[in-house]
Length: 135
Image (cartoon, rainbow, N blue to C red; front, top):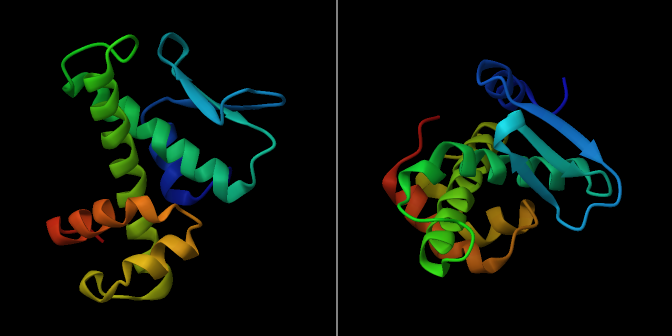
């Protein structure tokens, strides 16, 4: 098991490879032609999972945004937002299973602190919880 059962199965089912490399400038990125996500080796396992989920969010959502990631601020911003939402949704679902908490009982700040995520995600977490989670 590389990450956790759910992520590993997801990667396998979608034929996505993960490579962990030293000395990257970025925390991670996706190479579409190779169906490979590259992660920075210096990250902790939890940080790698967050970056991996963010990159998976790009894989499954970027084609739904009109425009190019490179060179255009609005499409890039939308793609980053969707990738972050994917990561947050997955982390929330795992948090619910791990803590046996009902979605409506989640304290957004406590969740963000437990996952070591910035408080700037608080509104996104609230929106995702209000929209419903499939746990």
